[in-house]
Image (cartoon, rainbow, N blue to C red):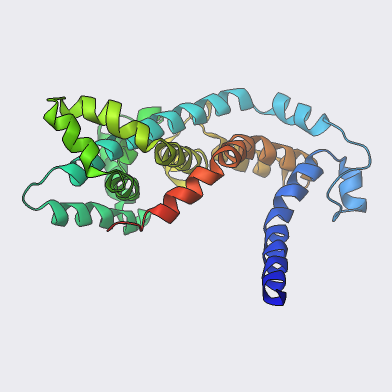
Length: 271
């Protein structure tokens, strides 16, 4: 009993330590700069104000940057989810020569560092004339080795009898996928969609390389630009901009955290 209580207390400390910067960011965005200077460690202001949000919204075209980031994230998420579903379906239910070798080769791509592919991808996008475009940011991110692995594990947890029964009824492969298999792995699909969306939303370096015009910037680039303009002194405005940038990913993760955890826990059930 004592060990369980001590472990629970340790987890609580870790949770508080992890959540503190985020709570401080939200609280500081609602304080005046004077209140931040006078009481920097308090999490919530005595008197809340939205002046920093109004300032950010008028000084920077955040609406445009939100739309840019949303479209990039949506395209990348849809493409990764589609290619992951089709590849995982083939690796799970079809027998062909070199299947395991090809699967592990795709899985290894998840461990290749971005710096190794950055220059070839940039040259490809530049030669295709896609600099400063949504498609240029999305093009090198249309497939994901980790997504294929996780969905393959999800498909392998489905009883094979479901697939065989559909085949005996002469149902086509795409109809089996759509009507039989995908409804059974819906939590894994939702979790992967949220992870792909959040990762793309928060991406900074690759969009920074591709997007040359301010009108095409995504939120992480705009946030860095705004921080530089403020000179690192207007803490309230910077925290308001950071909160606006983080709000949608935080909400998405909060809504799908159970599915995300279950997907990673079940990924090792079948090899």
